[in-house]
Length: 416
Image (cartoon, rainbow, N blue to C red; front, top):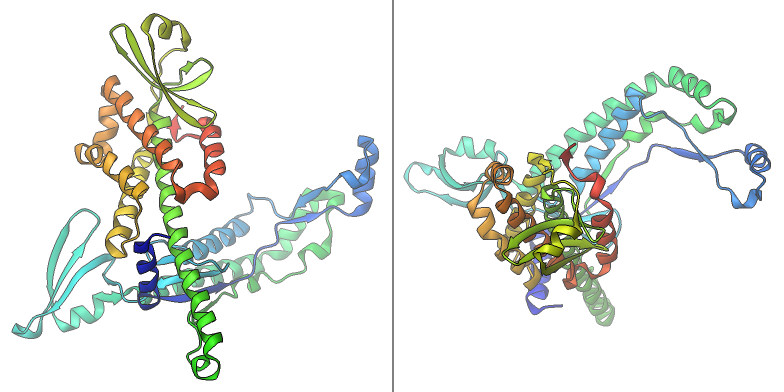
């Protein structure tokens, strides 16, 4: 681990506390009864031990079930909200910021008490620019909150929504079970539905101490030092996991925008990202087995080997915004905690000119009106993604991300 990352890890116990989320899950699938499995195996003329057959307990179109699932996802997503939390190696536990200040929903950069009139001078960042306000003590007490309070308040609101959704599902359970009986036929088992949906709202939030017990120092100094080293290693792993998340988010955003800007042609059987004629040669950028390849080929050959009719995709605004949000996340972590790396810094630096030149809407407009700019933007994004993909941060997930990139051609965010 870099020396800078070790220093960041040492800061985390001061700035963050542990938070644990414990909740139940909605039953979703069950195995088919053995009798039905044997019957199906006979029809297929296969060994019953080679089959593992299941059934869905609920139809996705059921409104009360969908509402419960959405409410449960909202709780989980807020628990993992990267603006307030960092990953922790233990499943179900995160690191939660406790000292960071917020003015309404804006990150406070400076909070300074003024002698004149007892006013509070607050400088905050709204995602675009830094602004200031003078607040009376009463306003400050209402509007300026620490990150832990903001997080807890929003979590309680989402848990309340889950409780309401669980009550609605419980009230409709008899009719719901009857519809599943008709849908599943012989695969239906009454015992699969012997649970109380209200239990799904039993969410427990706790704050475990992610530090060695100070009493151990007097009882057994060696054990205390071992525990201290174990927690320090966990904090260092937390930094590594956050760097991995930032790098992966940036790669996904870059590759998504590059793919969305490509024009659906192919080069030698591979997806073409961009092609720019430069007199007798053509600079070709294409995707081969999840890797970005650049080549200069004779223009006459390129015109033959580039197949298909150029049909630029219409990019959704959200596709461009993903890149902006990913870049902001990297820069925020660098400013707040110093979490960064040479790979992330290089990727950000290579794109800062692009992001200074265009807003999200301006980038899309330029991509629509200028073929050269579209090719240039697609190439820069693809190359930055490919370079970042080779970074040490993404080594554990490199193969997975590359397969996602390669397989995402039909799933790109675009209008068909």
